[in-house]
Length: 274
Image (cartoon, rainbow, N blue to C red):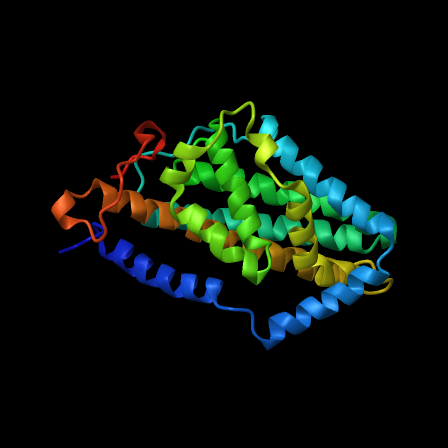
């Protein structure tokens, strides 16, 4: 029995299983060592740098959640298969990786002050990418629940290994999560800003702090930004692929579903399956 409706979706499901295993594996020696190095770096980084990153994370994320600045002008795409959406997502990611690399090279060549300016600019690029990605996969970011989904994807990409399992579970069970969300006017109270900025900072700081080193800032800035967008892009695409397959399974007759789940509480918010 074809569970997902196409050979491409079956192949995607297998690839997602492998990605999930890699994503959730316990931190190894390299990860633990990197964390120890990051902790030492944090101790010698000037407070001004930490304050800049903290303010940037909170400011950009709040803008993404409460304004229309990052919302794509075009409506969510409809009438496309998963393969078509993946192809468009790859093209979108390639564009944003080049954009981030160019921005990182420019600010990295300008010394510490421009290097600090790179942090909020880069977060803005990441958010813009994720909002456009949501629309490629058929989800409207005018719905505050979809903006919260974007925030969870952002956190999953830039959190420590021990924080990833609960974030992944929230994303995997998004219909149930969305049903339990508080009203739009009060959900911001449930965001742990301190944890969000700390996890983001600790995840990116080793690469990004090298950008502030005179003489190598431009090269490191381009390398770091390109790599960070690549990581975000892979996590983002896989999260939306996962949602697509979960929704495909719920559309099957009950007898054909691989795992029986509760019905979608927000059927009007889902992209249409071809």
